[in-house]
Length: 391
Length: 184
Figure 1 (cartoon, rainbow over the protein chains, first blue to last red):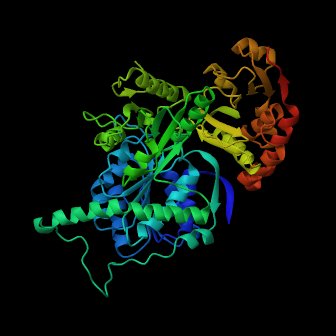
Figure 2: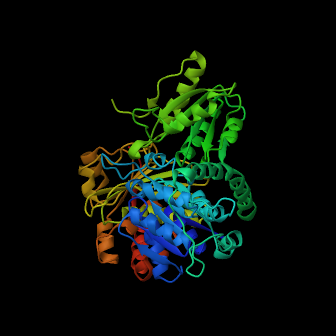
Figure 3: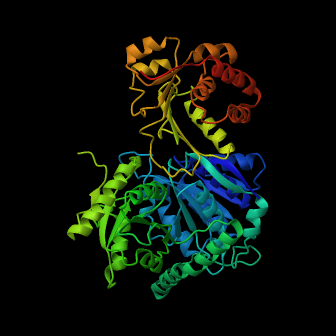
C-alpha cells in the first residue's frame, strides 16, 4: 500500500529509512541535511524506529561509527552534506575497501569558501573516487525510492558496497511536494533482512582492515575496481525488481525526448526537471532538443551513455561544480574521455550552472540550447561557459 | 499554474502559509510545491516563501520570478521592497492593511488587482495574537479559489491540532471580510 503525501525529500527519506528498519543512524547535523536526521531522531525517540541514534561529535566520527556498526552486521544509515562529506573523506575509502553496505543520503551543497550553505554538486564531485556506488535523485519520490533500493543493492552479496544517494540541497531537501509513501510491509517485502557474509563476532573472531603490504595492495585495488564495475549488473537487476514491486522505473541513464533530437543536453539531479520543461517548450517551437540525465554516477554507465547519445552531433554537459585549474567541468571531462576513442562522437560543449545556490531559470537553459545549435551550425566548440555569470 | 510569493517577517508564519496551501492542494489530488527562500532564518527579518499549485505535475525547480499572486503578511514590508515585482499582468496582491485601496495604490504605486484584509485586527480578535498567516490564507482563497476552503481547513486542523479552532475562525472570517478591487 502506498499513500500520497506532501513531504520534503528530507522527511520522505527519513520515513523510508524507518520503514527499512535500520539498526543504527549515526549522524552530525549540517544544513541542508538537517531535517533528515532531525526526523530520524524523532522517530527513534517516539519508538517508531527501533534503532540506536548515535549523535556523534563530527562527520568523521559519524562515518567511523557507521563502519563499526556495519562491520558487526547492523543495517546502517547516515546523511550529510558539503563540509560534512569532506570531513568524512578518509573514512569513505575505508567503508568501500571493507565492503561495508552503508547507505548515505547526501544533501548536495557547495563547499566553502566563501561559506555557502546552498546547493551545487561540488561536495559529491570531490568524492568521485572513494569507491562507493553513487546515484542521483531528481525529486522527493526518487530520493525516497532510491534510498530503499540502496539498502537492497548495498546488501546484495555480489555487491556488498556502500551507496551514496545524492539529492539536491534546498531544491529537494526543503521543498514540500507530492509523493507516494509505501508502507512498511511493502518496503520489507522488497528488502529482506541483511545476512552478512562476514561480520565482526566475538564468538567467531576475524580481522577487518589489516595492513595491505606492497605484496597485496595492488590486488586489493584491482578487486575494488572490478567489484564496482561489475556492480552494474546487480544495479540494473535490482532496479528492475524495484520497478516490478513499486511500479516506478529507474535506469542508469535516463533520457527525455532524445530519440530524434538534433542537440542533447546532459544534466544530473533536480535541475533535470526544469530542463524537461524547457525541452517541451522548445519542441513546441519546432526545435528538436532532448536530454540525457545521468542517474548512476558510479559505476559510470558508459554503454548506456553511448546508446542515449546515439548519432546526435552536439552534446552539451551542464556541470554543477568546477575542477579548478583542470578540465573545468568534472562531468563534462568524464564524458569527453568516454567518447574519445569512439568513431562516432558528438561535439561536446561545457556549461557550468547553479553554483552555490544560484537559481537556474528557464532562460538559462534556453541559452544553453541556443549555444548547442550555434555549435552545430558553425562547427566551432565554444570554451566552457559559466551560465548566469554576472560581469 | 498558480505561483504564489509570500512576504512576511520571521516568526509570522509565511513559510507555514506556503506549506498549508501546498498540503491542501496535494490533498485535493493536485500537484504542488512549497519552499522557503533558501537560507538562514531570523525572527523579525523579512522572509519570502513560495507555493506552486497545478493540475499537472510540476517540474519547475526555480525560484518564482513571475508570481500569479503576492501575499503580504506584514504591511511594514511595503516600504522595504517592491512587493509586486514580477507580478503577472492579471495577478493579485493580497495585502494585510487597515488602509483603503486608494491610499495603498497612491502610496506604493500598486496597480494590480488588490485583495485587502485587516488581518492584524482579525488575528488579534480570533487568535489573540497578531500572527496573520492563517487569516491571510482566507483572504487569498477569497481572491482566487486556488484550493477549496474545506481542504484548507482540513490542512489547518492537521497542522494546529488544539489551536486549530481559533485559526479556522480567523480563516473563515477573512474569507468574508476580504475586499477585492480590480486592477486599475
